Length: 108
Image (cartoon, rainbow, N blue to C red; front, side):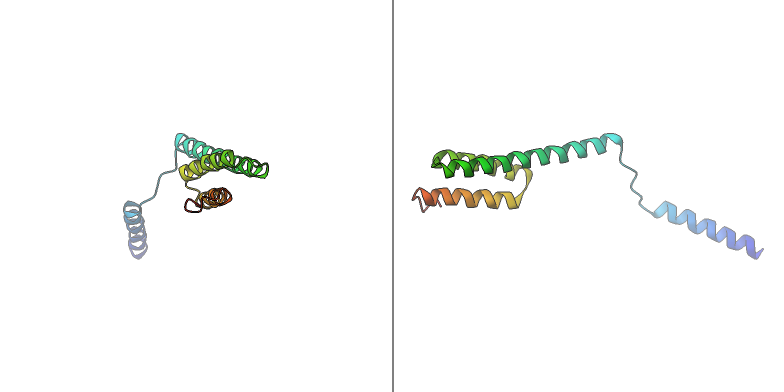
């Protein structure tokens, strides 16, 4: 009798725990694919913004300040879209530097 009562108590406790626990079901293949695609897109956008930043620096080095400014602004838009605060800060710093070079200190 004692063994049966112990076994019944264990089964009841297990059943109660399984009913009250909130277990998240595994993600479907489609959810994984969408998340992966979004991550890839974000990485691609970040790579594009970093490339634009480098182009802007090259433009500054050859004296193309206006072009460099436009390029940094394009990079800034991408960094904002993907939520990359570090990139936003770097782009804003570059933009401020261009305005400083142009003597537009209020804009800098």
